[in-house]
Length: 166
Image (cartoon, rainbow, N blue to C red):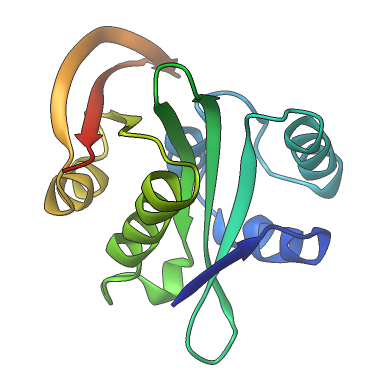
């Protein structure tokens, strides 16, 4: 597995990975409208390209096939912290450890390349599989925000999770 910068040609993968609005909202936190389309992804890329403290990455498997996506945002060099989000693995590839690989790769990038000492992320209580994945690579709960996001008739709590460089 390896990371590479996200490219326009990766849009087609993200658009086909979301066939369920609820799961899409867990990923996008309301930043995008369902269904995801090229226009939204173009804005997404442009926003990251214009921000010197944010990056988009794709994860490729050993055959060079795109199987995951992740973003690094809010890199704060003075505080030594960066936030990760928009984490998703190709639904057809789930259950193979790719999510864990993706998170580990981006953590290594943040600690080894960006020289940060702390990584943060948020995960909704409605997404226990993702929370378990993050815990399996060393993230710990550092906070809980009640009713942080509304999806239809539901109110989702979200956990702030943190991993420190050892």
